[in-house]
Amino acid sequence: MLLDRLFNSGLRLVQLLLLVLVSQVFLSSSVFAATVKDVRVWRAPDHTRVVLDLSSPTSHKIMQLANPDRIVIDINNASLKADLNSLELPDSPVSRVRSAVKGKHDLRVVLDVNSKVKPRSFLLKANKQLGDRLVVDLYDKKKTSQVVKHIDDNKKRDIVIAIDAGHGGEDPGASGPNRLREKHVVLAIAKELNYLLKKEKGYKPVMIRTGDYYVGLKTRRGLARKAQADLMVSIHADAFSDPRAHGTSVYALSRRGATSAMAQALADDANNSDLVGGVSLSDKDDVLAGVLADLSMGASLDISTQLGKGVIGEMGKISRLHSRKVELANFSVLRSADVPSILVETGFISNPGEEKKLKTKAYQRKMSRAIYNGIVKHFSNSPPQDTYLAWKKRQRDKTINYVVTRGDTLSGIAKRYQVSVNSIRRENDLASSVIKVGQRIVIPSS
Ligand SMILES: [Zn+2]
Image (cartoon, rainbow, N blue to C red; front, side, top):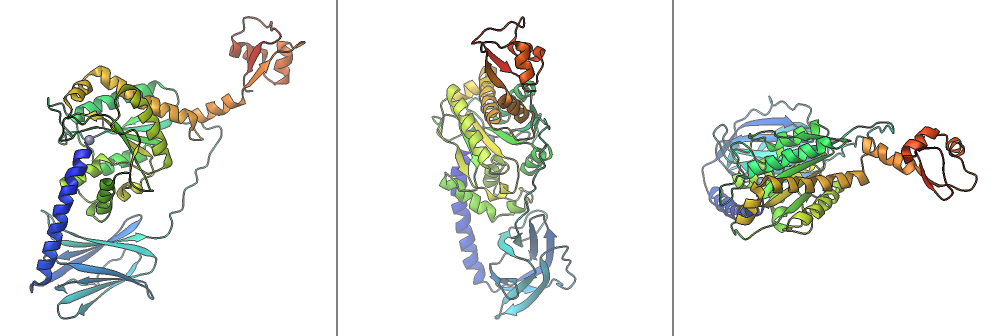
């Protein structure tokens, strides 16, 4: 359920922007000052969040200055009531928080920083628990050192596939004209995929949700990461206002940019929103949150695109494609995750014909088989090095095809390649040790 959401969110975004503009004009001419009641600082693995609790919404400007490195936040029509000296700055790049009165009515807050950061700021509207807030996120600039996995050639671990059935519980996802719910269809397809992968040697599927309940987007990613998944495949079904819209599509995340301008706009907006910190989605525009939940996937690695291509090729055999290529989107909010991910839209539930198909066990099986084929083909060609499949591939590469020449005996060949006669017989299904000139024999790896 992506396209309509992207479309609707676009409209919502325009409305939201207008609202922000109007309120800023209004507020800057207002004589009522906002007070900064409290300042809180949190340290996350890759950024520091500074939250200023406001008595009412107001506009602000943020600047980054050097010598010494500092972030300057000018808040219009505001005064300070918080005690900055008692502020705790746990293990953060912020070494000190200072304030000054600027002009007649404005407040300047200065964050002295002792390492390179990239600031982002945004206002959060009051919700049931908290009042208006100005959030300043300081992203660490230092490169995160990549963990180089020690690869043992003899390791034969399974390839872990996290299967993520979209939505669930109070979030039904899209609905068809005959009330088929996306959450039920995608769980059924996910279960089929799980069944197929379980039977396949060298694979270990992990279901992100196993029943009709909702799993938060952060938790979905967290579960995939915890399982050390090599791939997360999110399964969804599309919906659109036009019932004629049809077909399947595959999305992958990309660092390089979005193939859809709307996806990029949403990503940009989200990057400046509360979602960056993974804070509760409850006070967010629910449509935007929905899109992000739909794309709640992990890292944007080439593997996602490659895999996406494989899956889309398989799906093209059994269904009409909505889009022939893998759609890309650059969602920074998801970028930090380290699990390659794809999102599969298994058809338009809003299309009466496709709803009917999606409802049947036969079509659900076909769909899961197509996803399975795409995954298995990809990983048998390029398995991660420490896996059983990689080991098997190495063995396969090592095997030799030998053509019997005059004077050869099976024991002679066995001796030459340091394998047993029996293993050659087993490998080639030979009833006896008699061989003929010109016969092709596979020599198993020793
Ligand atoms: Zn969906």
